[in-house]
Length: 145
Image 1 (cartoon, one colour):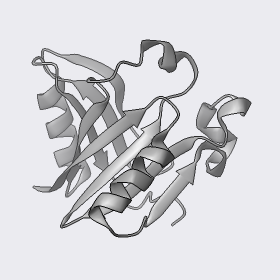
Image 2 (cartoon, rainbow, N blue to C red; image 1 turned 45 degrees about the vertical axis):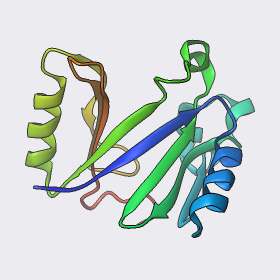
Image 3 (cartoon, rainbow, N blue to C red; image 1 turned 90 degrees about the horizontal axis):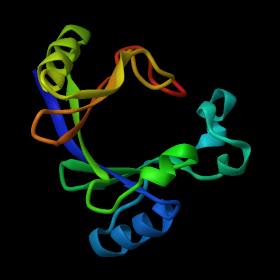
């Protein structure tokens, strides 16, 4: 069963500015602002990107608007209009696998489903229609938990 579907936006280094704007429009507070430096080894980010936003969230009604700064080599391929993902939050690891396999079938896998600092199962893919997805099952592997 899916718990939530939420938009995830990427920006070329101005995520905090964008989210301050969204907060001015929608109201609310950021329950989470993580910079790359907050993760072990800067989550692989180059030293000059350590202070960039790795993850930010803003509640909007029952949903969560989330975002990140694109850094490093990925910045060269960044293109406005293709900078959004849909985050699927399943109830369990088996459902995460089923959803990831289904969504990536006939598409491309950007990051295979795997354990991360913030989730037991996390993966990124683009489906065969060009929609970008993130499957995120936290389980017991919550960052900072």
